[in-house]
Amino acid sequence: MQNLGYPLLFFSSFMAATILPFSSELILSGMLAAGFDPFLTLTIATLGNWTGGLTSYWIGWLGKWSWIEKYLRIPASKIRKLHQKIEGKESWVALFCWLPFLGDPLAVALGLLKTRFVTTAIWMLTGKALRYIIWTYLTLQTFSFLN
Image (tube, rainbow, N blue to C red; front, side, top):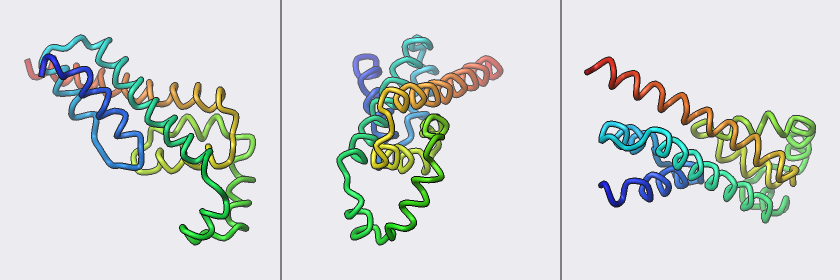
């Protein structure tokens, strides 16, 4: 695991931020338990998850409204209402792309709505970093308590 640890963590974090369900937290916790550097582990998990979220964003960016109507059977009127609700709040929406089950569709929706990339990317990074900071802290505190 020592040789594969960081690449595996990046890959699992990336996959966890795409449409495919995957739990990077288990790998992160396992690596911390095995004595991997907490700061580097946190950084790699965050960058992997952020890159995966940006990939979902770009998938949405490449999508077309007509595809959503045709394949997901969501009427254009509902899409317009969603756009109106999100408009002006893109930053806050991007901040919550870390949420399980909701985060991936949010990232795709932000791309589909053609939100400003830099602002979206910064807020997405902020939310994902906070997620892993809290997880790392709680994991290290649990290990400290158990020892």
